[in-house]
Image (cartoon, rainbow, N blue to C red):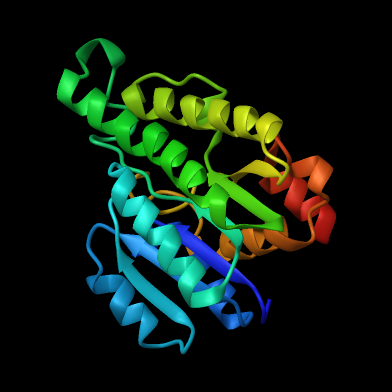
Length: 226
């Protein structure tokens, strides 16, 4: 990926940080953002071609500047990983009927509108063969008790993937790595570094027709790469 430019939102920790490391090790120019750039700047110091940008995906002007920075640093954008997400609460203990309005609104503003802004603002800078990956999970498709606005937001993000997949020339797909140990999952699941190669595969070797508007899950990745 020596000539590739990759934009990763939510790059300061968890899956995002693991993807920053994985793509940087493959030689890509990585432009990573988060609300707090401290951890990304520390990460960027380890790699020559990682650029840390402060951006809040809830703010379309921040996202616009993020994509302009990526285009300025690396030319056209080859891969976008819309990974920024938030969960206000403890998984399994957030019944929808008890969700505060403010918490519901901020979850959807980050996890749905943030994906919308990320893809929309990337479009003017995308390479013809670019790929857009959106991080999600089975909770978007399989209801479980107590998952509140988070589950709703992931379903919304996957609906955006299907819509953009229809409207854009470049493939847009969901990457579902299963349960990963992050702040969002309360630390439960496999290590983020173990699933980062799945994003590399989705960005490069996964057949475009199997990605576009679809969900690429752990089983699909393992079957394709075993």
